[in-house]
Image 1 (cartoon, one colour):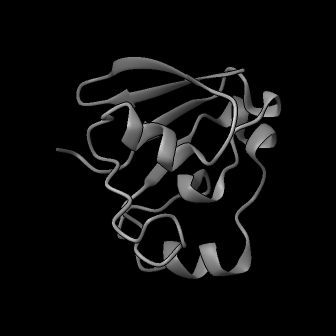
Image 2 (spheres, rainbow, N blue to C red):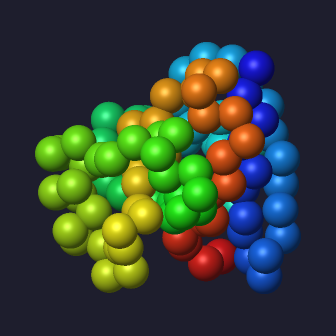
Length: 104
């Protein structure tokens, strides 16, 4: 079971747990503000943009080619940006902190 902390509006931290699927679906299922997942997780909308804490970036890994193309369209993308629909929930990402990029 992976525990993931989402940081939203004004540094509020929300801890959620999951054991399968992707992080975007986990966020949507837990009503995390700013994670919309409009495309349903097929990496075509960037409505699940998050910033991975620098200390955790190795756990989630780098974005793939299609994901990088989507992130290029984001005004506030950084070296630590990921689309959370592309991050699989597993024990390997236990403890990661993700800051929601979209202010709501």
